Image (cartoon, rainbow, N blue to C red; front, side, top):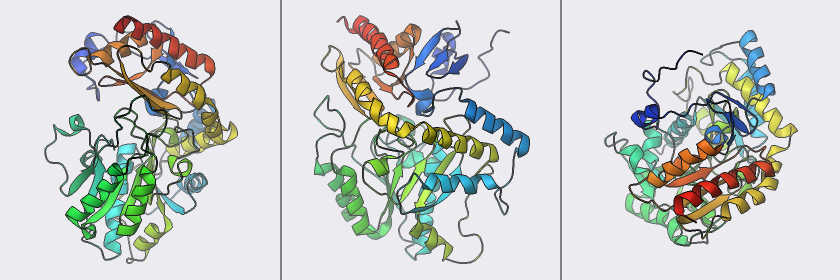
Length: 435
């Protein structure tokens, strides 16, 4: 194999100079493992990037993609159609709450979020409420990196390089408990949800289009919500005429261990759901936005011609649809949504075995997602990156956000893999904090 030139690729969300001085290159993947440059298997404890829920190298998806490329490599969905997105939309609705009726396809979670925000604005305009243009996100929220998602997102470092972003955006406080080492939902605290009433009082409900939240805050460091929090947001939005958007790009497709989506498992029905990642098992880029019937019907009734002036060249791409349909087949055939629920206790036991150890600030988790927050030991991110790189060398691929180690293994994870993850981080963190 020729020597790899690292110079030309500008890497995303990466300190490029530091990485290229000491690169970590994945050369292959199969099942629960990726392979490093030395040909060694490394346990994938983050499902690629929250997305490879079925494990790597699924032949079913590869075969479906191969056949799609040979049969129909591209077809436009502007003024034309092909079978893929119609079939996929129908299949997705089988796993969504009953009131959902239509699906709009995108190419990523970022595009799904921006599409959801635009649909919310268009819905109010179609109903004659054109004054409802304000969007409300949440501190520590992550909703992708397009201008809409960055604006409603609440992670400071994702925003600070890009100027004022969208006007008319406000943020709820992040629902973070002062209690540490809480497994699952944190104790109820009405302050966090009632802050929405305060924002309504400040801006006027007639100016607010939608509220967008992650059911479980993922990229910021895995923060499950307080008991009753999502239900209370639903009540306020319903009473005030606001749309509630769930960003399930991470939590969708079994991640929370409560069924296909958090919306069904947590017993809260939003008006719009954005999804991506696990929809194709990460094999082909794809995202989607599902809406309730009244939203679609309002836009259909607003006039003749094009009802929503929005879309992407690759919306409902034939190959992406083939990958997603194959992924859904595997989820259903292997009962992986149910399996995620069955494996969650062992996974959470592993995470919480680190609670109370020296250098461990907090442990959080729900389903097959969780986080271990470390004592910084210096500038922000120093401790997290040290543990992340040491774990990679020792045989586990994790994820690091500042000084938070995040975990989200594929839904096919076995107890032996959970033990491998535990044993590696036991050694790494023991060395780092002198246990």
